[in-house]
Image (cartoon, rainbow, N blue to C red; front, side, top):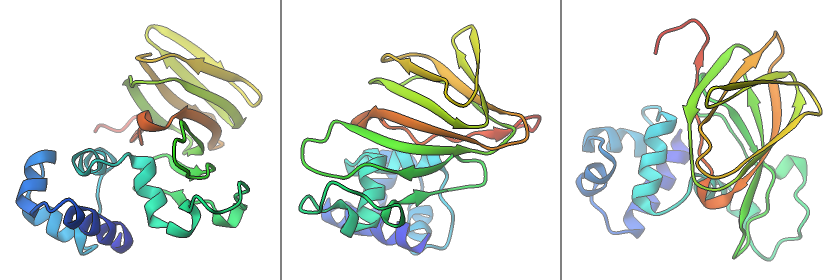
Length: 197
């Protein structure tokens, strides 16, 4: 959390925003931002997403900035497994492994999402397309009123504004390869099935 906090502070100062001004933009208190910047508290996925929007960066750009050496446009097109950024913001979140190189004009993000068994992610929609390919486990894809049971080797491709959600089925965590329009990548939070929010 210290590295995330330090980067938030750096981006805020670059934008010449006070903590109060940033807090007003993303609907959090100045005291929370102060603790977050010092790495003294955890940040939920929706809150971090709101802060990133207020700072003018996408979630994907934010996580690439955590590892500057992997985001250099002058680096080779190959990204070794040990150099891939992996992000897990909370127990309830999908663990994201970013597979894309960062370079000017890049249009999409490629990640592997690791969804804990038994977790449910409610219906939501976003701009841009989303493609998913199931690597391991069983995923229930909810698409409006339709339900699809997906297994390793199955894939799906959704257009903009598709109202969709997920449920990790069975006893094995789900690993899914996602390709999504870069500017529309959303980090999602979920909850253990059977627990109230």
